[in-house]
Image (tube, rainbow, N blue to C red):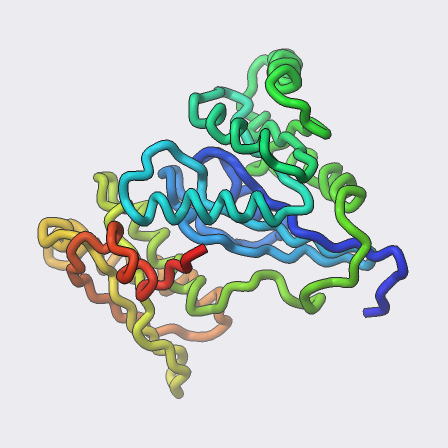
Length: 300
């Protein structure tokens, strides 16, 4: 790709409280699944780069964990630090909020933005749920009064409403720079990472108790064989009682999760997949810095 003299490239941090639609937005912009999505808060636990490249610009979206108040466990503190660091490094910040409701956690995020030196665009997400549509004007007015945003853009990440307009706006706020990543690269995360996240997503969607916050997935083996890709994964939980929930009666949960995950992983990798899952207990892993590091949670 020939690089134009006025080519623009920069980091765009996508910030907001948990479960406000940040990952859904990233996936919609990229036209593919970069981050897993569930209805449960704290689904995103890692900083994930999504690289959107065009002839005249490369926008590097930084998907972050939701900033939240409860930071008792080491993992919660790590997620908050990860999001805060993305904010500090950004050339532009997209602050995502829910057009249907404002919460104290939104206020907490807004307080962090006051010390941010980068321009901030407010994304009023989920506008497809605002009825009647005239109420959207009230929401835009309230957002304008809360903070000196560079722009306020109403969007629906789920319906991809107004995302093209946003993509046209962003390059003006990025520095002139050659691209930082190859044009065919869409994320900085490996297939192994995405495989572990797909398994965790399926578990989170199936389990309705507190369990999703006490489990993580580690890929033990991922090898191409004659019959396809052979994957062994460990599902770590914090207590013995959680192990039974994750396995299910006669292994029912594990079987359903394995089947659902295997189909999506095969589509991701473009080949047959043979997936084996085990559930093991690692006591209080989410509150142990060494365990978090060993399980792939990077220290910011």
